[in-house]
Image (cartoon, rainbow, N blue to C red; front, side, top):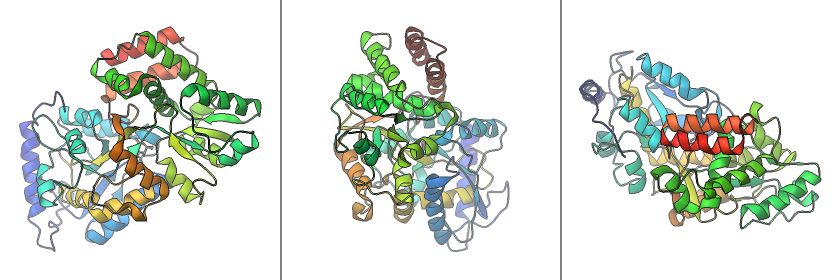
Length: 430
Ligand code: GAL
């Protein structure tokens, strides 16, 4: 990663102390219970935004393995509702700044993790990779995204998700006279069918609050600019003010015209439900959506289809959740136990089966996973990988916040396309 300062001396001392305390246990590998503030391993507060529905089911599956692997450590659920951390991230910042960190928190691999590293809010966990035998368990590219310039690794990944996926209701498409097996080579052919759905009186494309609109925007940019052009948006080689981006923003505007008008009041499970309940034909959502289909006993290929957003086939818009060891965590021993479960083969298998994602570990047998996940695992191996904007992989939080603000302004009608484009360019320029 770029621009990471060395961890502060205070953080480094805290890390050594934490690991020393965590290592001094005698109860079957668990550190002694020390209680709050003393490096105890009697409990662990795990901060995520997996608070409800299929996301909670994923967390629950991980907790079940944790309870088996670490029966002496009490799991304390610090989940804060709101998809993509829309509420959790602000609250986490407040807690970190007030020196009141949870014992471990969810953070995306990539630029977002770098924010926490730069602010000296998380400890290196490289030693745990050796201790838990994780060094060769993950793809090297992924480990690079968890690393800082000092060569240290700062979190343990739990999964890999894909953001550029279209999900359909096959019956809705059939009823409107569309071919439910159609996949579309580009956005314009897809828009032709969205128009037909609109004429049939069905919401063509279900969407929710701002972050889901940003996620739609990133997939449109990816579709229109291609993988190289899209990645160039983040390294400066693609001109945000140019005609290609303008054309993509026009496509985004057209697509937004096919979405449900109550979108700003919904979160992703509700917009997903519009599709599952037959009130909308399509949605664009990350593959955590797969878990909600499975939870509701929907059959891939019968009830729904899932495929890359038109024009993005062969590109995997990537994000990975990972877990950290915050500076000053009250129970670093408990955090270490949690991190061990997160990185373990059992933990990754149970969690990812329930979450819709694929394991970050490369040594998990995928044959017992669902059909969608097997195809995602294949795609991750062969596709071109790009970094998700809406999910912390491509840009730091400050930039994604500015992009989200500009997007909301545009989609709520408070700015025109030219203003939107210049605000996006300014957001990325910093
Ligand atoms: C992402 C996260 C996923 C899923 C999604 C929707 O940011 O990485 O695991 O939780 O938000 O909430």
